[in-house]
Length: 155
Image (spheres, helix red, strand yellow):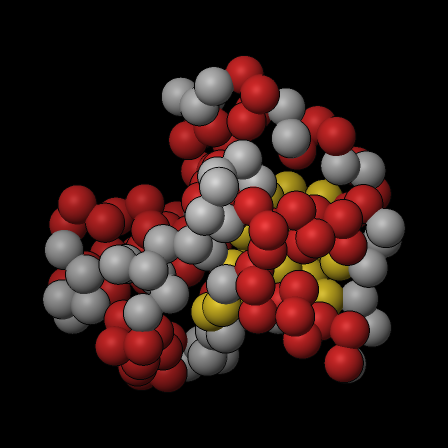
């Protein structure tokens, strides 16, 4: 079964970043090859408006059938606020929390990010999942594109 993977803005930017491109480019190749469906939120689309043109066009080069678009819902806003209220992260990380809440509520198989401070961070992941559990939601897998690319073909 094809994985549905929620991506945040750092993954799109990582395609063009010297530090992350070696692991991000193969991830997007798997998307192009139809192996993965990426979940793209309106938050990511809004964040990309501030990015350089060459970054913004990356997603337009992906097959539309491999992209699932989702909007920020009232429920996702409320769940994100619960992460902040529990001090998993501070108020300045609201957009990061909204990415996680959207991925949780749309039942993404995994959320991938290169944001090690607020997202791909073991203590933070435990915090997000504790709030998810307390509120009757599933646990969310949070990984880097490197983990998806390296281990993705073993399913």
